[in-house]
Every structure is written in structure tokens, then in C-alpha cells.
Amino acid sequence: MKIRTITQDDADAVRKVYELAFPESERDLVSRLAGELLSAAASPPILSLVAEVDGHVVGHIAFSPVTLRDTREPIGYLLAPLAVCPDHQRRGIGSRLVAEGVKQVAAMGAGVLLVYGDPRYYGRFGFTVDQGKCYTPPYPLQHAYGWQAMSLGEGNSGRPDVAIDCVAAFGHPELW
Ligand SMILES: CC(C)(COP(=O)(O)OP(=O)(O)OC[C@H]1O[C@@H](n2cnc3c(N)ncnc32)[C@H](O)[C@@H]1OP(=O)(O)O)[C@@H](O)C(=O)NCCC(=O)NCCS
Image 1 (cartoon, rainbow, N blue to C red):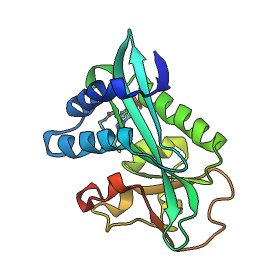
Image 2 (cartoon, rainbow, N blue to C red; image 1 turned 120 degrees about the vertical axis):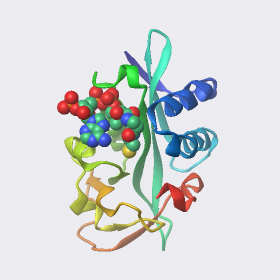
Image 3 (cartoon, rainbow, N blue to C red; image 1 turned 90 degrees about the vertical axis):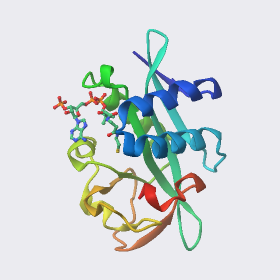
Image 4 (tube, rainbow, N blue to C red; image 1 turned 60 degrees about the vertical axis):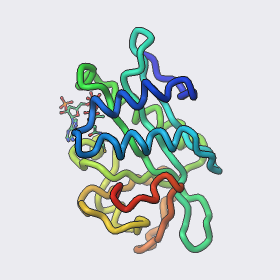
């Protein structure tokens, strides 16, 4: 298994990963998000990685920059989306995608990582719901318990209510 940076040529394969991995009710929304992140420009840049087995893309993860709503200062990254094809799940591929992405965004100077997903999965990497409570996402959350954060640097130095913005691809309330 190899993890590498995505290219435009991976777009169809990545869409397929989301179609296979997500339930029907969510797959269109999430594969559209992955596609929009692939073609979006951002500063600092979006990080998008694929996992490849025998030359086939079987997993994908993206990290996009998060900014302070009031000053637009970049403070870290949002991890989303993430998926591994069902027939390759539970072999550590998802964990390796997260670990490699965390390593790369930390090296890029990210102070905090945010994620909106199952704490039973993301907790193993160091994300906590408690840290997530310090950051107010751009839209109301359908599942408040899934909003988590992990400090990579100085974090938010204890500020209780930091309003953040994400890149335009996350500008759909139904994603939250
Ligand atoms: C979540 C996902 C990316 C994990 O990929 P993976 O390659 O199977 O992950 P790993 O092999 O590194 O880890 C598998 C472990 O995570 C657990 N796990 C997977 N999804 C989980 C979830 N939603 N909640 C809790 N645990 C979960 C598995 O039970 C397994 O546990 P084990 O190590 O004790 O056996 C994959 O299951 C997936 O694509 N799911 C559908 C899409 C999705 O939910 N994406 C995340 C959206 S936030």
C-alpha cells in the first residue's frame, strides 16, 4: 500500500471510493465535496492524499485550511472527507491516511486540526470533543458530539469560542 498526493487524474477513482464507502443518503454530497476540494485553490494549500493498492486508488483523505472568521488568519486544517473502499477497510489504511496527513499539515505549521466525525474513530488519533468545543463551525451542527479538535502547536491558548471559516467547498449547510 502506498500513500501519495492526489492528481487531477485520480478524480474518477476518488469519486468511486466515496460512492462505495458511504451510504446512499450521503454519497453524492461527500463525493461532490471531494471533487470540489480537488479543483479548489486555497492558501495555505489543500492537502489531498490517496491510498493505492496494486495501482488502484482505494482510499482518500483531504485537509483544507481553516481561518479565523474575524481576521481570516489561517489557524489550522479541517480533516474531511475520508473514506476507504469497503473491501479494503480494517487493514489500517484509514489510520495511515490520517497519520500521514497529520504529519504533513503539522510540518506546514498548522496549529490545530478539526474534524466532524465519529469520536470513537477519531479519538484514537488524539482528537477530542472537549477541544472541539473551543471552535465554532461555520454552520449549525446536526451532530454536536462529532465536532472535535486536536492541537498540533500552541492551539488556541484557551480561548473558549473561536469562530472559524472553511474553504468554499464546505459552504453547504447539509454537510454540517
Ligand atoms: C472510517 C474509515 C475511513 C476507516 O477506514 P479503515 O481503513 O477501515 O480504518 P482502519 O483500518 O485504520 O481502522 C479500522 C478501525 O476503525 C474502526 N471504525 C471504522 N469506522 C468507525 C466508526 N465510524 N466508529 C468507530 N470505529 C470505526 C473499525 O471498527 C476498526 O476498528 P479496529 O481497529 O478495532 O478493528 C472507513 O471505515 C470508511 O471509509 N467508512 C465509511 C466512510 C466514513 O465513515 N468516513 C469517515 C467520515 S467522518
